Image (tube, rainbow, N blue to C red):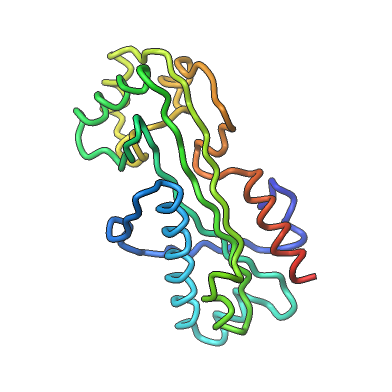
Length: 204
């Protein structure tokens, strides 16, 4: 948020894990899925905040402060199929080779929830600000030796579809993007700015 210029407006940043079962939530359309996951994470975090002590809540939400909860999710779509985090090396090999045949898309949501003492309002999804970014990535063929090194390193197993365009073994084979690199890496700065500004304006 500091990079986006909100450090003075919003103050400190706190990270709270949602700890939800993401695979229990399914929607037919990728944009619907990531939007629903973003809202489900917000619901789970708000429930955790409700269980905080008064002292913990005051530390998290000082009186008079603008407190916004940012949640979201991202999936990779390729040839019409939603790609999960890969569970095997063969899955990574197939995905990486397939990316050269047709563009992959990242579909990422951002949900901004204004947090206040009126808990009912926080759980009211109509009072939240959400949006979805879709970015297309076009690849040239990634050499097999690069794919094998990615598998050995292991980080690709933690990325949807095994997609890591910022990795030095992958970046030279990214032909072009229809969108932005920050969105591919998990969070669209433009979308965050748009939604945060809307949330702050509503509370002015």
